[in-house]
Image (cartoon, rainbow, N blue to C red; front, side):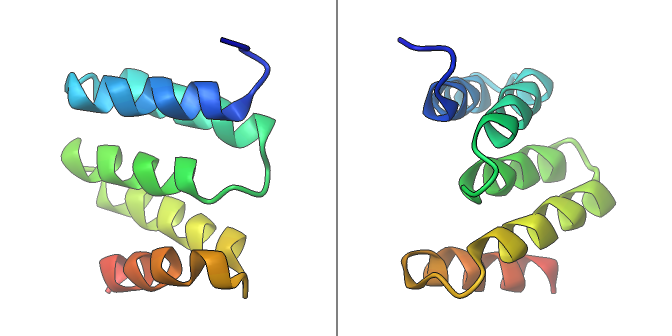
Length: 88
């Protein structure tokens, strides 16, 4: 495992989500988003944690970041659509 790789923190955050350690997962997703400033996935997962923690405003902000990071990349079209629907 290489802690300088964003995917390490994304994986850690996903594991923490499964364990219902949502605050810890958010911290891991934040680290992943700092290491990779293009990938929208950490913010998407973070929004799910925030919704679980009853923080809808923060979740909406995270989802806006997902949409922004997805841009027009066709690889992220489904994720972008899902984030858009979640905001509505």
